[in-house]
Length: 148
Image (cartoon, rainbow, N blue to C red; front, side):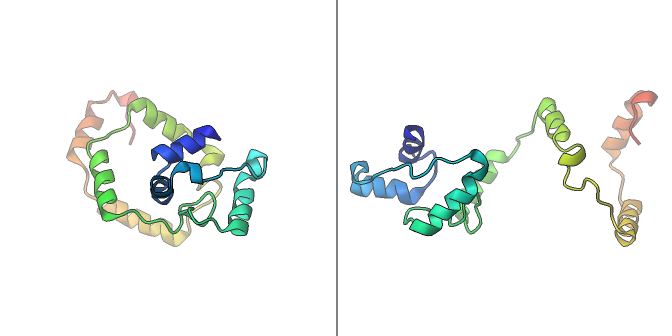
C-alpha cells in the first residue's frame, strides 16, 4: 500500500484531483485503509462494489478497471502524439506481438466473414495499387522464402 500511496503522491498514478488535494490540504489530512483483501480474479468487481458504496470524491474514473468517460486534454493528445512520432517496435517485439495473437488468443478465432464481406474485401484487393518498394523487396527474396 505504501508503494501505491507513493505513486499517487508523486504523480505517477496521474490522479490530478488527488495530487491537488495533497498539496492543498497536506497528506497528513488523508486516511488510507485496506477495506478488504480479495482474490486477484475478483479485484475489479470488488473495487466497483466499494466505489459504488463509498462514491469517493477523488476517483476520476467511475468504473473500476475501465477508462470509460475519461478524456485527455488537447495538450496531452499533442504531447502523446509527438512522443510516438518516429517510434518503431523492434523485430523481436513485433514477433512477440504477433505470437500473442495466434489461435484462441486471436479475437477472430473460430469466426468467418460473411459472403458479402468476402466479396467486398476481394473487390478492394483487386483495385488496390501495388507498393513498388514492396514489390522490389519481394523480388530480391530467394524464391523459397517469398510470401505472395
